[in-house]
Structures are given as structure tokens and as C-alpha cells.
Amino acid sequence: MARVARWVISVVASVLLTCGLAHAGDVPGISNIRFRSFGTTEGLPQATARAFAQDTTGFLWIGTQDGLARFDGYGFKAYRHDRSDVWSLSDNHITALVADDDGGLWVGTLGGGLNHYDPDLDRFKAYRANPAHPGAGALASNNIAALLLDRDKRLWVASTGGQLQWIDRASGVVRDSALGERRPLRMVRSMIQLRDGSLLLGSLDGVWQFDTSGSTLHEWRAASGGSLDVYALVQAPDGDVWVGSAEAGLYHFGPDGVERAHYCNAPNGDPATTLHDDSVRALLFDQAGSLWIAGNAHGLARMDTASGRFSRFEHVAGRAGSIPANRLYSLFQDRDGVLIVGSWINGFCINDPRSRAFTQIEPVTGDPRTLPARPVLSVFVDTDSTLWMGIIEGGGLVHFDLGGGVIARYMHDSADADSLSSNFVQTVRRTRDGSLWVGTGAGLNRMRADG
Image 1 (spheres, one colour):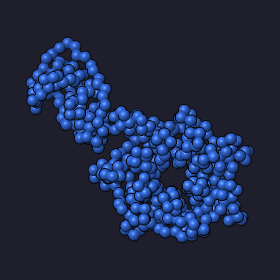
Image 2: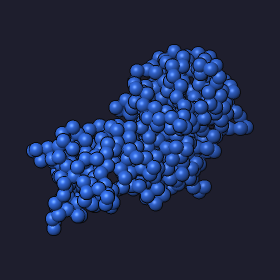
Image 3: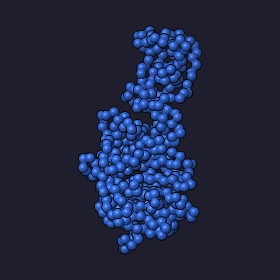
Image 4: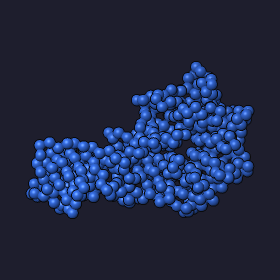
């Protein structure tokens, strides 16, 4: 044990050092990501944030199971179905949203078909199925599963009717693709457009590539040879495709449709190198190139795809700045780079990357690498960028490395005259001779540079 000399004094000043910190490692309890949550208390019409879109004026639209909400950063305006108003939203359960470059918004619903919102008139026009005359310029089903506005400004509509359709925006007519009715098209949950212009569809029955100029579907299969049950698709900046499955983890495909890697959760594995949740519900590449992964039960993860390392973000009851729930469903990034995370049971949260200049260090119960207690009264940054922290509620003095966690902890020991004089540490400083001075509730302590 390092020898600590003591001098009892009557008053010790309390000092809090604010400093810039190095990039945090993979130690639990260290994060520079903080979230601000919004739910029904703040005015969201219902707690499930299924879909997001941002219109040309900057409003954020949120689709819930009981209405559509427009958010201006301060408050919400809710839109719901009104039987007495033919221009109201056709159904309250929103399943998909796409912002149009004309300032409007396309809204897919669970049972009311497709809606187009006109911002000038503040009203909706509904597109519905026609069971009496199927195929006559009508939707295949009123249950809309996914929407995509492609680079040619065609709005693609996937529904439970088993057909892929698109809207001729000039005439407002619903047109069928050349694929006709097919089993893999019954439950398409995600659609993206690849660099070559083809569409990639993620469905209950696999990953399917569709050349819009033809009538063929080509399936992308896992290396095991099986079809995938897919919730999420995203194309990386390098052109590769990442696939989030219902229960089998995360897949990495090349642009040629060949699997390159498969990531699964290992319950006893290193959290930094294993996927947090095998039930993936949404994927997003942010402007910095990080892959965000929303799980169905275990919260949010950020992946560095170059190294294969993960950082996890979970809901912690009572902890300000954590995500609102661990059951997540949707991800979105607005034009300013703000990350938006939708939960199934408790609204949504946002994180502005500009706030990541601040690093938070908190205790994690049962993990000796993390802080032993929350109240930290004094912080000193040493020359090697490690931290010395004085904890005021029985925590003593902690020597801490952002990359590895607790290096050492110094506590009072009544049987050791060379131990810290008290576990109530109020201030920490190092002098030119290399000595570390520690002020406690029971006096001043000195740790020499040579220990």
C-alpha cells in the first residue's frame, strides 16, 4: 500500500475541476452520449414511436399507434381520424412515414391505407384498397407495411396485399409493379434503394432484390443457406448492406448479396465485442459513419463497423439522460445530425452530437471497474490523462482511467496508520515535486511521487 502522510487541519476547501477528457473506452458507466426523452406527458399522442420523418420546413413527424404528431422542438400538434371530416387522417395507427420534397408527407396506416398530407391546406388525402375491384388503380391492401421514395421520386408502397406498388405522383394513380402478387411481398418491413437503382426488400420471408425495370426477384440468403426474417435494412457509406433480423442478430452483406459477417449476442461474452440484442428492429448509419442498432429488448448499441466493437446504451430507471425504454422500434437522423430513437412503450428520445463534448462517468452496481459511488466532489487530471477523484460518501480516493476503469482505490483503514485519513474526500491536487495532496474530512494527506 502506498504510504500516505497526514496533517490534521480545521478547514479544507472543496474544489471541482472541469476539464476536457480523452475518448472514453469500453468501461461500463462511461458515456458522452446523453438522451432527452419525450413521451405522452410532453404531448405525444401515444407512447409507441413507430416511424419518423422530417419535412422540408424542419418539422419532425412521429407516427404512433394512436395518431400522428408534428413536433417543432417545443411542443406537439396531434392529428387523428375524425369520422365527420373526410380530409382527416384515415386511421390513427401509423406504420410508415416518408417526407416528400414538395413539403408534403406520406403516411402509411395499419387499416386506413395511405395518406398524403398537404401542408398548405393542412389536410389529408387518402388512398385505399378497393376490395370490390382489386387492381383498378387501388392499393392492394389498407395495411401499409413500408414506404420508400426513390431517387426518381417514385413512392413505393408495400402492403400486406402481397404486391409491391408505386404512386404516379403526377396523376395520383396507384400502379402495380411488374412483380404481381407474391408470397415474399406479403410482409415487407423495410425497403432501401441500392446504388445501382434496384430495390432491396426486407421481409418476413427473406431479403429480396428487385430490378425495377424487370419482373424478377433475387433472394439474398445467409451463408447458412436459410432465408432471413428481416425487420431492418441499411446501406453503409461504402455500399455494403447491413440486415437486422427478427431473432437471429445482425448480418453484413456485400453489394453482391454475399454474406460477409454475422453478429450475434453472446450472453457471457465481452459487451464490447458482442451484439447486445439478437432481435434487431432498426438500423441507421449516422453522419459520422457509426452504425446504430435498436433492439427489441436490450436497448440501443453503436457499432464501429471497422473494428467490430460495440457501445451499449440502456434504459436505467431514475437516471437522467438514459434512453426512455429498452424495447426500441425506430431510428432516424435529422438534417442537423440529431439522432432520434423511438421506443415501443415510452415515446422517443434525441441526442445532439454537439453535446458529446461532455463525458459522464457513473457507478455500475457489481462492476469493480466503475466508480464505487456517485457523489464526486473533486477531480484532478494527471499528466498521463488519468483522473484522481474524491468521493464524498464513503468512497475514498479513486484513481481512474477512461480506457480501463478503476486503477486503484484508496480507503481509510483504522488498522493502518499509512492509509487515507478519511473516506470523505473533498479535494485532490498534485504539486511540482510530484506529491499528490488529498484533503479529507479528517485532515490533509500526502502521497509521494515514489509511492
